[in-house]
Length: 194
Image (cartoon, rainbow, N blue to C red; front, side):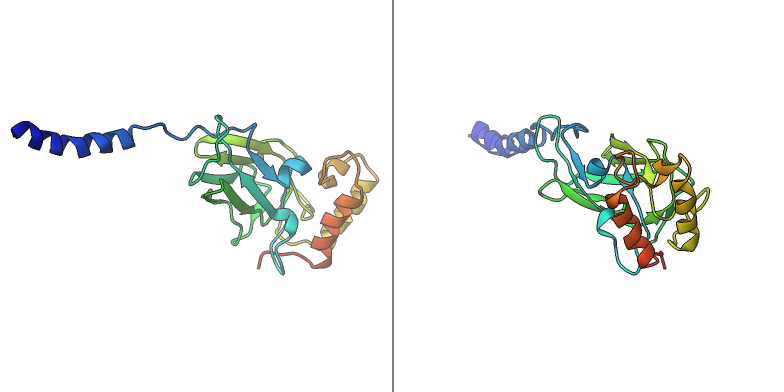
């Protein structure tokens, strides 16, 4: 009789132990995970968020593990490693992946840093990407989080010299239509943080 009572006590405990020691989610995979549109652009596009959030700053991370499984409820963040980047207060740079393994970052910011690693995308403790940062707000050593005439002057001066890389948002080697569209949207609405 005592053995039946002991078994009745141990079974739930053993079952709970089996649940807690089961296989853990796999580690995030930089190769299998995607960040769009930043992956397609080849750098992280940032621009201030007012009067409206630019579609180019809505980056959707889909987090996939090394085993190929979708990773839900994982902490993710973008860390800017450059003092040249100013960040708007309504930027969304941290959060957790949803049930589909996705999280949408809003890179509301300004400034330019062409160094890969100026922006790190991190899932849990794994660095998924090391991006250069490009913005229409690029009128000096660092961004001031306003796209206005000094930025246009800087762009115009750059078109005459070999510094176009700063304004080549899609990283195809030229300042083309796609770059002009990204720049033009921000300049036309005088994007700013506040």
